[in-house]
Length: 118
Length: 112
Image (cartoon, rainbow over all chains, first blue to last red; front, side, top):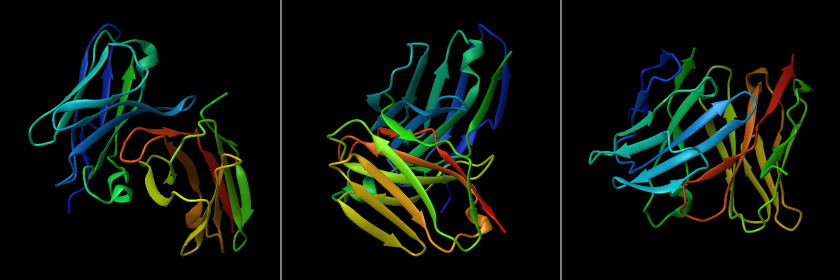
């Protein structure tokens, strides 16, 4: 079974630009979550999508947005990039919606997209 | 106060010894607790989950939860050099809710 696939692996942008990151979950997984990881703050929750709807949202500005498609693939977008947006962006998928809550909550992470803002 | 706190380390443990990693959390109603392992340059990988007070064992790993003290720990027995990684504690407030709050991680080094 293929794992979570994130593209691109590396990205270099300049301040003010926008960027779109892509995530394909494990087959059969319906929930996709996005996290930002930085050395100082660690892993921080951005948002979670299920059935094309944003189900949870973290404390990030509106410049950070996302969406999920009918095949569960997800994209996240960051507009008007700032230097502080430089980070590893991780996507995670999970089963969700099953009767076994312990199975639902197991997150499987992709390799991430390393974003550098110059 | 951070929602999930871990000692950042580094924690150095001799090969074959027991490594003990600790985590405290601030939200009393937290329901689910997880330990992830992250090798340098890699993504986090789930190694343990625990939901009830007490101990849960899986191979060389034991997770311990004390909800009254808002404390969760991970013990690694017979530590191996391959256990050298950053260990992330994660907490979920609600069952079936995939919004995890992570600690900043403890860097563990196993000394051969």
